[in-house]
Image (cartoon, rainbow, N blue to C red; front, top):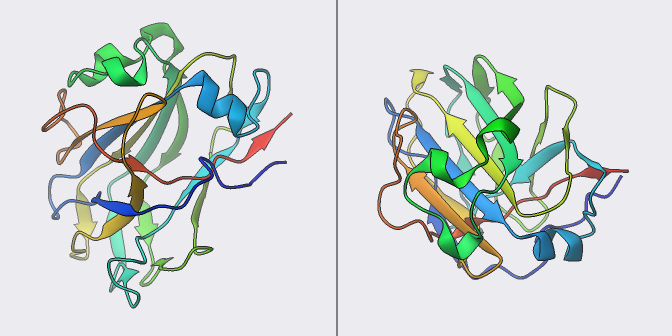
Length: 199
């Protein structure tokens, strides 16, 4: 199993990912086949989870959440991209080929203990997909993360590690988990993530 950094680079920027309580959020990223292949993800293997981390440059003492938080649900979807990263639209559903959209993870509820996320280059928060994984068949890939409303606790937004969008990766985001269109442009900073992969 390969769990090396993906994409593998130094991150100089960060993005505000978690919104104020009550609305949840929807985040979608398109990753190019070239980027996936360069990160050691050839067609035919299974992506079995993902990991995110906080932006240490924003606050070296940062952790999230400051107290236990419970969300109604966390879902992760994957599927073939309908558009190249540079051509992503604000309409979420237009960016993924409909009949390839697969629910790879469902946590209901999704509970985060205090300090589950910590800063530091090696402080990744891992999510093992409840479905067992997604079989990558080649081509550009869409990863979508939907975090619903908070039902316990009151977590505040924190900066997550990210890097600028470009021809190989771009993202769209809305501070509402029910949103059908992104807020702002569809070329937002891309969350730094690891994608463990098995052949």
